[in-house]
Amino acid sequence: MNIMKRHIFLSALLPAMLVTGCTKLDVNVESQYTSGNFPSTSASYAAAIGPLYTQLANGGISYAVEYWRAQELSTDEAIIPARDGNYDDNGQYRFMHMHTWGKDHPYVTGCWQWGFGGINTANRLLSLFSSAPDNATKPTAIAEVKAMRSLFYFFMMDLYGNVPIIDTFPVTGLPATQDRKKVFEFIESNLKSALPNLSSAVDASTYGHATKWMAFALLSKMYLNAEYYTGTPRYTEAVAMADSILINNKFSLDADYASIFKPDNGPQIKETIFAIPYDANLIQGNHFTRFGLHPYLQAKYSIPFRPSVALSTIPDFYAYFNLANDIRNATWLNGKQYNWDGTPIMVATTMKSLDATYSGTDYNINWHVEITPDLTLVKSATMDVGNDIKGQLKGVRSIKFYPDPNANASTRYQGNDMPVFRLADILLMKAEAILRGATATTVNSELQTAPVLVTKVRTRAKAAGVTTIDLQGLLDERARELAWEGWRRNDLIRFNKFEDAWGFKTKNTSETYKRIYPIPATELALNPNLKQNLGY
Image: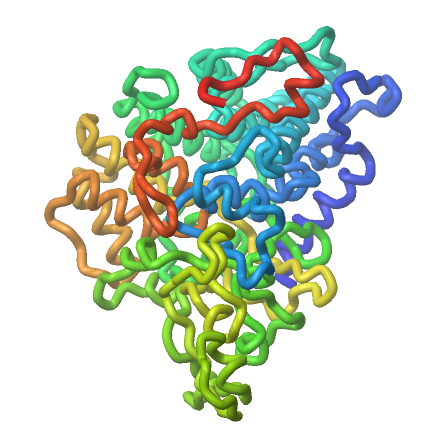
């Protein structure tokens, strides 16, 4: 394992044991700290803050699994169809794809508890830190926690829209639902108050931590979505926050696109602004290879466990990967599969095992393994594509988060860190804000128009640049660049396309209320002051 990543992982693991990430609202702070052992040094503050990052990575709900599925399975980017009854799991994946989820859906409930668990942990830390003696580290630690609380609140605002605003610990009384606009203003105010004291360092010590640059990135994302979130466009501010990153030259597009997502990614990746560190053993929560590949590919990619066949994309989305020479095309597996030496990957089977529709006399064959984009259904009611060999290999597979040969063989977790904000996203957000009405700005003597910004991203991908681009072209470019990074739902909603038809889902423009998820049934039962979102 990368030495810098190991240091980060161990730093996060220790505080998780020192201070639990309990989501109860009435834990006695004094039971954990006394006046004699309050945080006083950088190391002790880092130990105290650690559970906040543990919660983000995998606080019962993993950012890279359940939260990711809420953001991606509800779009055209990713799908888990049933395969002759396998991977139906009471319809939870089908409900995401078809937009038929309800207030009891496991992701609806789990993501709420995960997000407010993080918010509660942050509030507990802020209460603790406010009582600690003043020292040079205290303001930076408070700013870091406020920025992380803002990130959790952004996720909750984006998922659920109208949520309680909780900024005290312990909480007295049951908090009431607040309008999304007020939640937006709360996040914005907290980030701006934290900015002066956040670290501006970009190195192994700040990797995976909230910094000044993470705050700028989050504000840019909020302002880009502000017209949808609040009804008021803030595109000029989106550009300004992007420029706050760009003018300081702290980040650069990595020449090797694939390296950004490999198992040994980490602080050496120069375009990552904020990432969630994962490790196959120490910080578990990344399951892309487990769900996305196929046992026939296990030997080629040196996977130390038998992967399943569940997760893929749909032909509609794969069609965006159509640019000549674009290295991002190689993040997908499609067609006949070959070993590294060029020999075909073959499987010994029978015709009926290969194709359940075959009605002739069965016989043995050696078949060249082939992944196909089509997702034709054999049972439409359960979104079932079949579980014969051809059915298992339906759907283009992603290897963007590249298979980890050092993955945990028993838990099947891998070590690829998950970027949340990176420079390519900042460039594309700035381009979009300009297309939506903001003025192009000059950075380091370069006038950065939308085509200039998109061309930067395409040039790194070895694809041809653009001289003009419109909003649809920009959305298509975001699909290519940011596939499977957790932003597609946010993008489709902002572009007014979340109700469109894709895969097995039909277009339904009357269901715009599903742009936010329902308040979970369990939370409504516990707190009568919560108000269900309209339409549910």
